[in-house]
Image 1 (cartoon, rainbow, N blue to C red):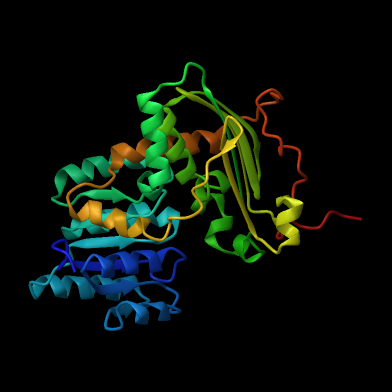
Image 2: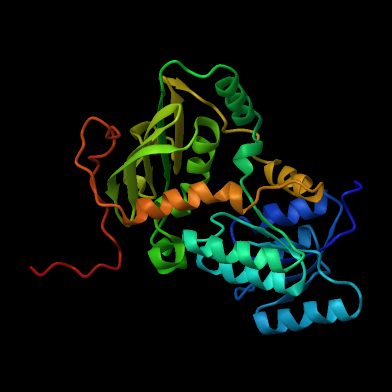
Length: 330
């Protein structure tokens, strides 16, 4: 236990993929998860961390319970938000109006103007809004940022980012397959990479989008100190042959001037470290997350560029069929 402990937490989105990382972070920082909520009741993972947590499948009952805790002078200090992307905004507002802080998974919101509204609300309530930008706490990434800051490159670094994380047909039946709810591929699986790259190499001077479909997206970023060709996909057909042969479902590659930057390990502690920083009074704010939110929003609505010079090598991979598209007439 640490002196950062003895705070009361509530978790919204307890069945989500990332929720166990938040449970672990709450536990490892010496705090208590008092309540959790999710429409889906498959949350047995909580037994590994907080078996006595009050759990609700209806938000209204969850709301009533946390209000009772306040009346009993055991109020929630932090709401951890792991709900679907399009609900983050509402759940952050709920936390602030309750009188607590909000720790929200990325993306904090889907649209830049939602940030303006949250900033206004944050100024009216005592609670603060923190976004989980855990790659900024990775030792390899921190070291790379220091190197760029201490020795600004005479020429812009050449960055290649390839991220393929296979998803099955279930993806399209869930909120993640609905661009109105997830923001699309570049937002849902890419925003933490874009945040990391801008944090290290500076803001965007130029942007091109070469591909933007239901299963993949690609483009080019000219940052202050780097030129980035990026490709992201949830289509398993896009995996390199060696990955397929070895039964792998994910491929991540980040290279700088053709030298690979390996940050595949060290992820296990990053959410806990994020919580430690927040509990110390640090943490990443709306101001920190704004550039990446603005960027993915522009990507979502940009016209496609036909530039071949700046295109990622995988740009011409075949498009996968959306499982819910009607069959073409014979």
